[in-house]
Length: 194
Image 1 (cartoon, one colour):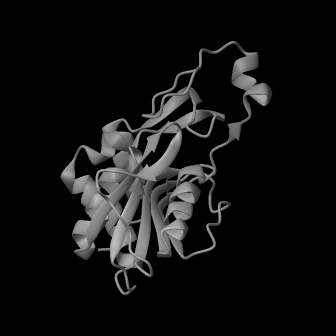
Image 2: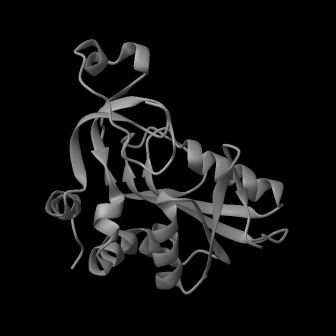
């Protein structure tokens, strides 16, 4: 049975992963809606369900390795790798820059799929794509659970998301929630000053 986007949204509501308030996003933008995918990914059955969409999209692609940005993308990448029976690696931040550590490497010509949890501006995925390019590897696609841009972010390669939502985000100086003096919260993994 093919699940609909409403079914996936129900999982987000059920697990408390769809939050409302005033949030500082990893991109530095502000929003009244936040997707805490980790709340969904703590349950293996939901992890498999949301990542199956990505795996199905790329099931017939020639892929050697799955690569994800830490932290949010690690579980997504690992699950997609398990479903496709591929190697999984991740890039992590050092001095605010994503890079491969822990002995991870990409070979020239290696075909990779980039996986992430949430895309708003696509910044982390674009950084991973740059890593792939610098190693001489080839990105065959990008898959992520939530597309907050509702399809507006284009990585120039085949891409798929489990959920598309057009959730508004604002530059801090244009944020109506700031003008209302509503306290801003940073719930994600990356350290950003509030």
